[in-house]
Length: 186
Image (tube, rainbow, N blue to C red; front, side, top):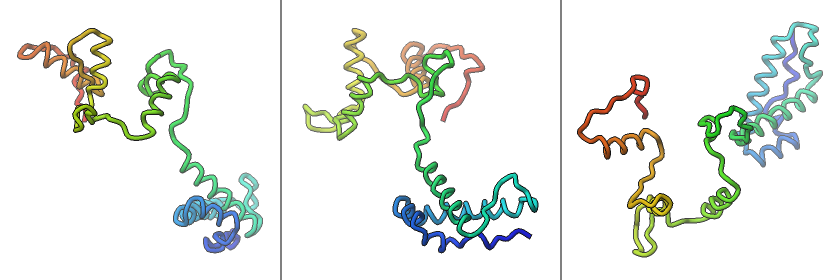
C-alpha cells in the first residue's frame, strides 16, 4: 500500500521559506491553489505507480515531497503569468498570415505606437474645437493625402469593407455571392 503520509499538508508547505516567497509574489490564494493541485497530482501518481516501479521517481519522504511540491507549484505559477503570445518565425510562405498576427510592425512604427500609447491621446477629441470629435479623422486625413481622394473610411474587417463597398457601388442592384462565401460573422 502506497504511503500518502509523505505528502505534507498545505499549511506545512506554506511554512517553507520558498513557499512564503511565492506567496508574497503571487498571493495566498494562487499559491494555495497551485499547492493543492500539485499535491493532488502527486497523490494520484503515488497511487497509480506499481509497487517497486522506478519509471517515475517518487519522493522518498516528507522533506523531498515538500521540495518537489514547492518546485512544481512555482513552475505552475510561472507558467500562468507568462504571456501566452510569443514571437514565432513565419516560414509558411504567406506574407500576411492571419494566424501569425498578420503584418508585423516595422521598428519605426512600433516605436511610434509605444510613444502614442504611453499616455492619453486625442483619438476621439477635436483639439481645435475643444470637444468630442470623430476617431476616423486621423486615418482619413492620411489616406486622402496618400491616395489623392476626397474622402476615405477605415473599418476593422473585410466583411464591413465589402458591405460598404456594395452599398456605395451596387445599391439597388443584384450582387452575385459565391455560396462558399455565405458565412455569417458575429
